[in-house]
Length: 226
Figure 1 (tube, rainbow, N blue to C red):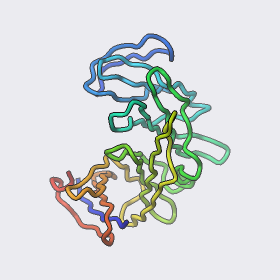
Figure 2 (cartoon, helix red, strand yellow):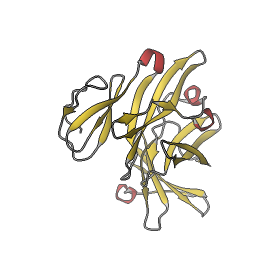
Figure 3 (tube, helix red, strand yellow):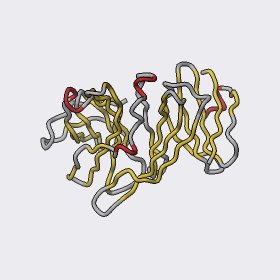
Figure 4 (tube, helix red, strand yellow):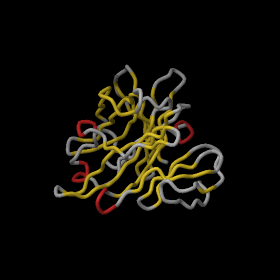
């Protein structure tokens, strides 16, 4: 697939978490959602109950920056997370995930290294490459950058009998027009069923279309980016 580009200028309620395994607290939400509070990853259900899915030590495990619940009506739910970690080789961004099946919650797993964010991203620009889910939850996408430019990466998601995990169904698209530091905000589909991703860098919104046609870029009015 090729990628078409277009650029244009351009709550949760108060929730108190608890330790894992304790009684859930309550808040008002309209649909399940996840959030980060310090080193804790929390899930708020549509009925207002909340529980802690994972507790991390920012000094040892890295700082959790972003979390997103997998779309779709599945009995087993998956949470995608992004963390910034420090190691002997310096800072890096890491993709992680866990699965929730009833009362059972897995560990917060790391993506395999072959599917991780490129390691030299921080050396180019130290900005978090925010990942987004496909509308059907069957893939994850993010933008990353290096001295070779910016690229869009997608990783498929695989459901097994007892867990869900990232798969080797991957794709990479060069996006030389898109500046480093652009963060994806959403992944939608257009009327033809093509993936359309929206990213933002400063006051510029990027509309990225994955298509079978040649890659192209054009300026668009704000109203045309939705």
